[in-house]
Length: 263
Length: 109
Image (cartoon, rainbow over all chains, first blue to last red):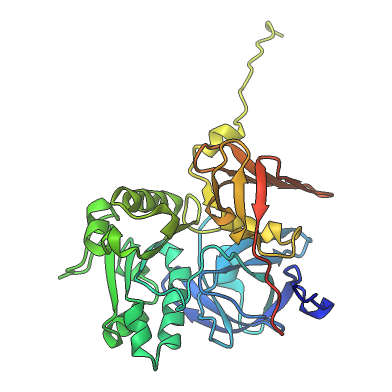
């Protein structure tokens, strides 16, 4: 017989909250991270997102979804926003918002595209452009949660394949290099599709089936797979993985739309 | 005035725009669904009323438009659910889903 839940413990619908910008961190020439204090925040799982609502002086409201970049273990919430030139909301968040300003958000949202260290097994992360953001939350969570438990790391070997146009567009560059360097169970592969620095030894083309065949585990290992980024990249990579034999139920996708950003 | 030349310009329809790769995943429905349901519906298992395929709502194919979204079965492409928002109402049409099941979460205080 199940015990009845008291009103205080029944789940509530997700409320809009006022978040204050505590810090701003530039990531690339077009992207920056907003570090937020959110009173009453109940925590999140890596991969989830928030809805952000901005209100203009004339009362016009616009709402967009942004993936959470921070690990669940962090005390503050971080969102990495990439400016879309013709976006309605992103230019405000990347160019105008300053420390001390507030914005409305609700979340965390989305229980499907999530990962945590209790999901034992190989992990394959495939991201393009700003699709790296929820994958970074997963990597950050994994790093913190396994910091003193190498055996858990070995049980969750992880590979990231991250596509960007050029080196300057690669978000979290130093942090990814450091994470991979400090952790032999994590491998990071970058592909730069439009321009590569002198002496570049990584991939130089869009993610395709041969690249995935090289990077991914064999389907028999049954890795958890998360693919995120512009819709065309996600669909092409997810199809390729299924063609290679990966179980579609293990390949989770988060399409960001045609441009890869949410505007 | 010269003879009335009536030119009928075809308006771009949602079908035209759907070709512009505005396909998304069921996760995007979570925000709007949270205004209707208290449980997280993205992990709910949805059974397509047309073909019987069952999968997490987060794995449905979503076509978003200005006022809301259409969620389609990835097996047979039928519409499973629709949601739309007008200034005065929130529309939710689940008739393409034969069954929704989920494991309710009780908050741990």
